[in-house]
Image 1: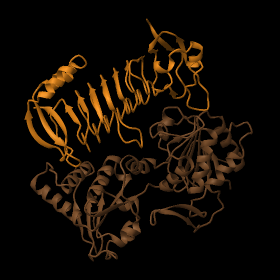
Image 2: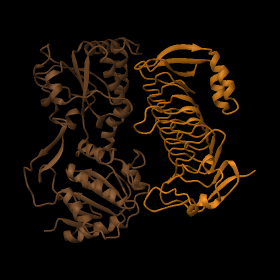
Image 3: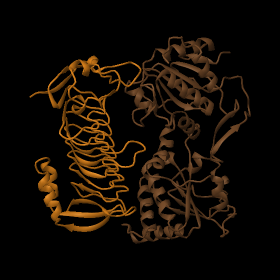
Image 4: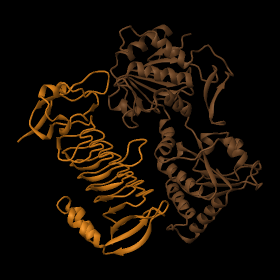
Length: 365
Length: 269
């Protein structure tokens, strides 16, 4: 059985590669987006964008750029989850749904165990703005500071103000609670804040990191970010070492230009500036975010994720159907994941190589 | 004398980089030379002559008849003493890093208008997009001088990391007005969105109506501010609404106390 379809109908892989090459080669400004792939797949996709003089974006770049924005315009304190595990005597959890972004987070941080290089034996755990009934963990006493998604930014701002001894316009009861939390943060010997950019925005992360910087005047305090889905952090690193920039970079003029607004995938498609798209989502077959149906579309995804429209080529899941290098949240580094369930499917890099092999000679550059 | 005139012949099918078409960079060039300037941003080459009819004129002034939301970087790095007028819309980064001069846009502007502008006088008669005056991704300060007036409305994060200068919005402002502002003045005559002045260090944000602010703005009471009245007088020729707003008694809220608390939000008392 073929693993390729055109508008939902099965076609041979050879035909699929041929047609994909034709679509991409004929476009004036093609978009390579999604990029839900391992490092080799991302490298192949970025090289393809460069060769076609198109642009590339990752499906979770909103999240990785949220953290990156704070890093590059303000500065951040971060450490690895393992360092947090052995040193933190206070853990500050920020925002709702942390476990949904990284299911293994609380095990990795060992919140229920004692600090190894700590001094104080019992960790304190504070959570600002958890979802209802979320702040429960066996063997851990979590102190919560309630905040809805709308007032999380304000609560965090008030906390930072009180950490610095500046006034906040709050009712006495609320102020007392914030003051107690501020005192706990100041008393920490090695504090760690944990957040997921997917649930926050750049200003909230900047506020949090600003507070961490303030706390570092008198104690040690740092952060553990939970990265974006579908390999976002690994792709960000690959993009950086290949082009000097994160995703949302274009090669229209023959050299990489980074613009978070101009090269955002759905804007490029919905504005009609991109005239063909290769969408890669090898982990879970997530659909493209844009609204326009007009654009010629090639999708690389796991079997069964074929969209109704356009060309689809099935690829294996990185680290599951084939050995893959990807970013591991547990260690904050690139690791090789051996395939647990090898399958007769091309890798993302192989599928892109097969498409590129069909380009005619006269492709510029 | 008449300005150097660019008349748009056809809608561009890609984004254009118009940073080379400022009057200071076109001084002494023939029409033929100007028509040969490349302004495309994709592998399809586009030159000025493909899209515009060029008519030479006065050395210090440029006029565009017809605009497009794909006109990026118009008036970038403009120098003092020069002027640009656009009879139409413009795209992203209008007046980007302009050192001075005058830019007027009859239509709408895209995101990052006046980004890192250091002294230009920019008038936008329609609306402007997000990040008016703000820095681009990865840059530290935003607009550092000059004056921007938007007669329509602006998007989110207006005045982001504003360092110096005046921004007047006669219509409404989106969310996160004056976010991370370092200093300078932002005046909004219409309604402003959520979370005003978040991470504001010491900028002044003036609103036309009382409203709930976050917990990091502290009420300092109503005042007759001498400087505001003086400032109002100087703004009168450019924005009567802004002038009227600043002439009245103002209630002052100090913040963002999460950072320094040396900034302020002023509303009519």
